[in-house]
Length: 293
Ligand SMILES: NC(=O)c1ccc[n+]([C@@H]2O[C@H](COP(=O)([O-])OP(=O)(O)OC[C@H]3O[C@@H](n4cnc5c(N)ncnc54)[C@H](OP(=O)(O)O)[C@@H]3O)[C@@H](O)[C@H]2O)c1
Image 1 (cartoon, protein in one colour):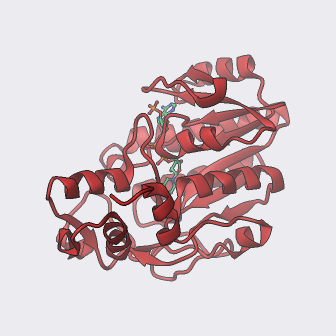
Image 2: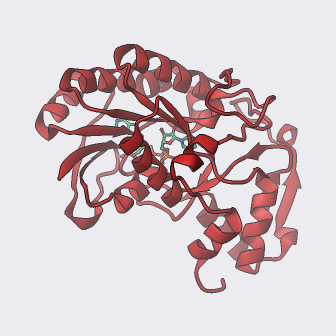
């Protein structure tokens, strides 16, 4: 079996990627603050990827056949508040990993984001011009560019807003909203922010597809454009929650450190053609929720 170095294995997406790893891959997961036990006896190592010496040591020990780099400071507001940390985690560590992949002659797949786009020209395909409106998007775009300079064979996967089961260290929107609703609390959701949401498990399958096909850039959005409010209504309906608890609001009603683009829907036709089949929200959420709430 080939060995896959999976960074961000304790994260909301990484945990699902480890769970969906296909038989051809022997996963070595990397975590930082949250040591986790990965499924099926996969190895889990702890390292701070901003420590270059530690990354080199990790790489030399793991001797991977490919790298799937998901680790990030993935909260736009946290990036806006702490630009230095965002630069260190999202850019510098990513470039170090890309350089090590080139030296080892192995593929590198990088998880980027729909937030590299400005939100005014959706839907965005792989040829669209990125123009981020917040620091997280800026740093992910800088990582895309600097990593490619180091590693011309890099595969960049731009990911959409994701939902899915909670991981060991990350709850995600579905669990958080269900907990609030169970407590009788309303959840406020934007009517004027649009994305192409996808289930983490479906995106995980897309990442393995990217690892196989290795295009330069691949968008792994979901199949439909939804506002956060529309998504919340689908979830509430499936969970048998009173829609009154899904409260509409606008981006301008909720001031946040990071500016938010209006519509970063992805056009993922290239991935669909390659065999990426993310499910529509109603279908994916039905599977996720299981028997009626
Ligand atoms: N979630 C989304 O909707 C979304 C949308 C578009 C793109 N993405 C991208 O998808 C990827 C995964 O996102 P996610 O939501 O799964 O993120 P997440 O839940 O916040 O997880 C982040 C992961 O990165 C690791 N990490 C952070 N700093 C690190 C460091 N200095 N050294 C080593 N590991 C470090 C964390 O490890 P510890 O927890 O162990 O510290 C954790 O495993 C990211 O690249 C993100 O930019 C996510």
